[in-house]
Length: 103
Image (cartoon, rainbow, N blue to C red; front, side, top):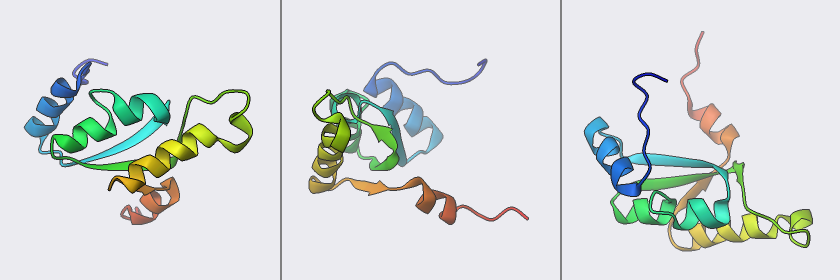
């Protein structure tokens, strides 16, 4: 969309967030065990840049194989790894509950 920011690297994301005063990043999407974990714009790298990173557990999934899909082992392993290394996680219901109620 016109005027919507598009970033391709962690440095571009960092510059945009700094310009906008963004301190917290919510991560959701596909490929938790690769993109969200280790890409330059992923959770671990953005935390190194000083952001509070929060993974939305029920809004992401890992790249699973036929063997891991029934238990979502790759997804759950990636979530556990982030949590073990000091990242926060949350479920979407908790985010919605924290939003101001519109009357």
